[in-house]
Image 1 (cartoon, rainbow, N blue to C red):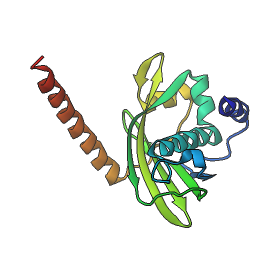
Image 2: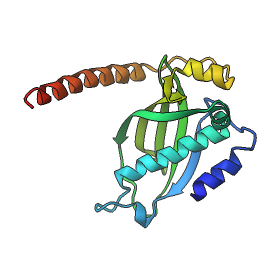
Image 3: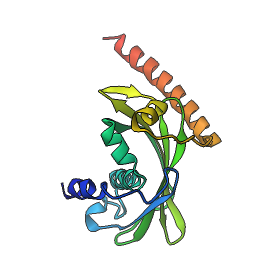
Length: 182
């Protein structure tokens, strides 16, 4: 609740970062962030990532533009690589940036760093909605009055997109085969 109030107040300030700038936030692992292995719980990583994407949208001015345009964003896919654990009371920084977009999704890169070492790396793709219907990033730009050319997506994003498409096709076939026996 307090986070939403604080966000509402902060979003009224002018942007301090460009859309493709790296936005970093510092945290410390708390006792209530731990799992039974005494390191940061996997679900907590997602919560920190959400918080940092929110911060990115505030400091770049994207949040205001989306709210004014009555658009909202939803995470469609997440890929997380847990490289090193984060232990109790350990300080860490989450770096968030937009890599670019294609005709359907906006791609984010988020990294958890502590003591100059990578601990976790995540890729996310986000889809935007307007009036309850999915819209393309170019439509978001038109509605929100943003005129920025996207950078070329890195090759590993193209590989990830191929993997996600293959996974979707496989999952749909498996689902259909399971329910044919019903």
